[in-house]
Length: 162
Image 1: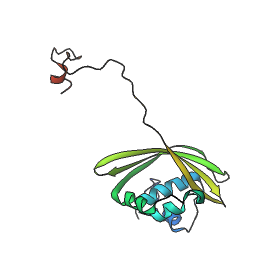
Image 2: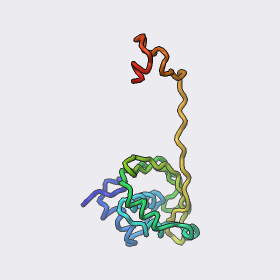
Image 3: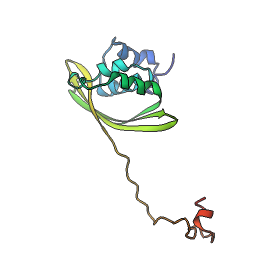
Image 4: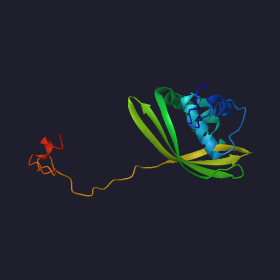
């Protein structure tokens, strides 16, 4: 038994597998988020389509989703924040970072996904990408031909900048 793609520590056959097969429903928005991530690793593009809210399926490209799932190596899921989305809620959001490798490059996908309950089942509605934080330097940038700030007396490009 292999561990589930979602990182729960539970076997796939006992975690997201039954949700993908339609034997059980996701009880929370987070559980659906984890099942959707696992669907990429397990190449369950049809589940990704079926777990979309019915009002948002009209422009979903199942073949493009399948290609992305097949062409990527899914490395891990980190749940950052969950708001609402419990068993008794009607809506919720899950902030997550899904890490995958595509064309030799490791890429993080940081998103806040919105979920709604419709006829007793959770559905993915849409997602908003979270932009990386801008980092500001504490000190001015050192030019390549300036003296190295370490005090060696060498140019930066020949010292710490090498």
